[in-house]
Length: 330
Image 1 (cartoon, rainbow, N blue to C red):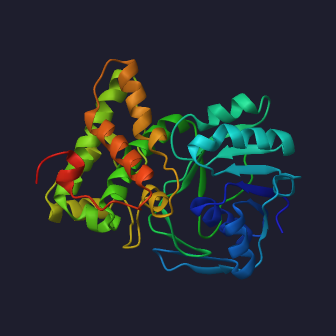
Image 2 (image 1 turned 120 degrees about the vertical axis):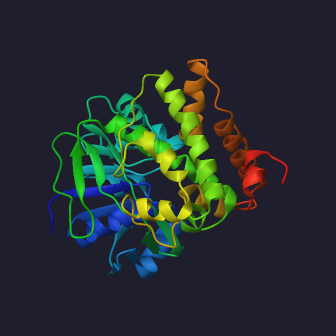
């Protein structure tokens, strides 16, 4: 058993997958999760799989609904809640585990800053999880894309294992902006209601993703923000790769990212289960910068409107076509 006690603060798809791997590595891991999640895990444990053939059953997990039990004695807290719940979770951590090291493994930019504001004096680090995790059934989580977990530089327990690599970087905010650009595609995937691989194999959808990313890149340039690459190529080249003919795109993309047929975006999963999405932490962040620096981002604005509409309808992913998403007549 590794000595460090780790709490997963927000055991959704990413939290369960990362936490399950850490349990398998011998860490004492506690899961702060919804009651329904806890009940499922207590009955059958976690089953973790991935694109490379991983099939791991983690039968015994210490998972607690109670905040104090989950956080008491934690050496390390991995924050995996939605970006909108960051401040609330920070206050919970401040009450029960104020001496713990805290790492944000959330989508978006600024979560670590929010945590620092409510955890004065704590060792808080930003992080970035590059891979996609799909919940295929109760207690089953499938990693459908590749990549290493990146954490802001500084002292860190040795968390890497056979099935996941953790690396320190000195430019985590730039990395997070790079990931945010990729994550703008989450809304496109959620609105289309189709496997991500199928969507990427359709040039019309890729052109839509490219147009949205170019719009965002222009806003970031106006704000003097330089996003770091989170794949094999710089962010500025990704729209050009998306615009390639499909046969050539497949060759180039295969060298950038491993992805299997189960991959769908976390935003699709949120709509599927009637949860609020992270649209404000993604497209919303671009639109805030656009307003601040006097730029326009109409495609990002439309994505936000369509996702909010789908949230309000509470009828799952709407299954729109490319022209519908663009707002064009078919």
